[in-house]
Image (cartoon, protein in one colour):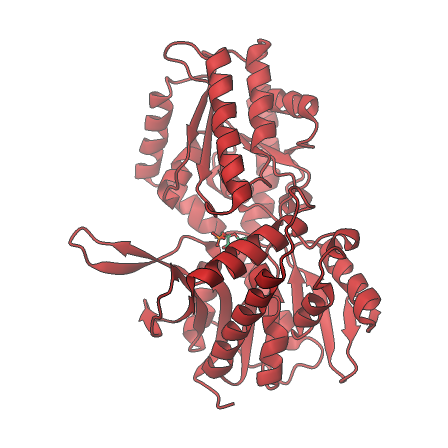
Length: 477
Ligand code: F6P
């Protein structure tokens, strides 16, 4: 297949831009707030980089276009593929399976067929766009077959893969009727990256058991002579960018305004999550409701602000969750609220980065209680915004971030009494204790930002076993 023009290609389910309509009715693309594009932008610019991804609408074919100096290559999905590849196999099969089967994964053969077909479309696009010997970085669970498909089309490429979500324990992964195909798909990469060392070990063990390849520590030896490396690269955020934003007068003023409109309570507790059943929203709301009901926290003093960003709204389990949370918030506010004092302020909406930073600045306690989470970047964002060394973080031990943020109040979200005790301890902690904890967490987050994460991955991809040459040009100063 003829080679294209990009020396560095990123493949992700979504493009790093959102379509917005300007007040004059014109349609514009705006860079999405995610840290990944921020980290990769410099490398992309120095290497004529291209980003391949879905633009978010169905039944619409768009031509490649440039945005802010980045080459964007849209992949189209039909309405049926959105239902089967995206909502179905990616988000109703793989998502729950990889998150400890928190809800039951559904296995449908038509969904799998669609996943194969769409993965092939992404691989074919990349094969056209990548220049000879280019570096290609495939992102996340929606595209696990792409590495192998791409290698078959373009054996000259250096291919990396990173899984942003957890990789399940071997016993759970075995449920997948297409387990061997997924493992073989990933083995098309030279380097397979995971959030946690345990995930990389699960993958290598499964490859040995299910595919029968020889393995040694983090290496897999393939019969064709290739060696694949599987390692952990805990992802992070644009920490300096968040801190800078949190220091702006506009954000500080907004933080004060938020507290004011909440009635200037003694304690503001905050949760910010995609509305997802893996996030442990029920558990944290119940814990807070019980603390108010039994008088450990007082309704005049404490407010819980929960932002739940709408997500995957046509998937059945997400609809069920939305109704459940609406009911739970209504019940708690009805039971323990008073006129002018609703203890839970529930916002089903998505907000720009500035508003999130203001909320982080306004919160005394941040509560992050997923039942399982690959990393959880909200926890790191909160820490990055607390340059004043104030504020406490309550963090689930089942979030990847727990292995780095050891000074958080770590909780098992299934244990409601334990969660209540930790929440109360965080609320009541004195300024010296919380400053000590926050300083330790800030050191970790500010030193290990997303730029370092991307740099580590790309360096090891370039230098790992079987590398043909250092092909990526370093980003321009
Ligand atoms: O990290 C998990 C992930 O699925 C990403 O791949 C994605 O960018 C994000 O969550 C949001 O999900 P979605 O693209 O399904 O809205």
